[in-house]
Length: 76
Image (cartoon, rainbow, N blue to C red):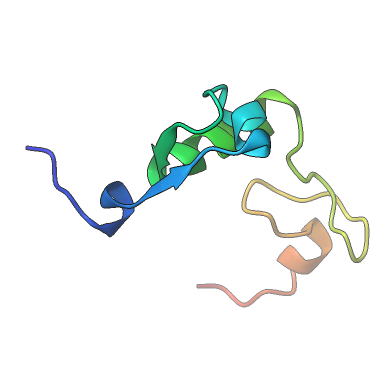
């Protein structure tokens, strides 16, 4: 069963930028979920993931925490 909610109900009209990101034609309608999925795929496919901390330039781990900061965090 496909649940309907606010994210799947609302649509965005594709402009020039979203057309490049999603591959859909300008003026078509996309849900927020489809736009988010397309943007994440674009970032992944084009190697745009942030790999270094913007403040201290330390390498980030998979959770996005700089390795130097990781040791200072209290255990959860």
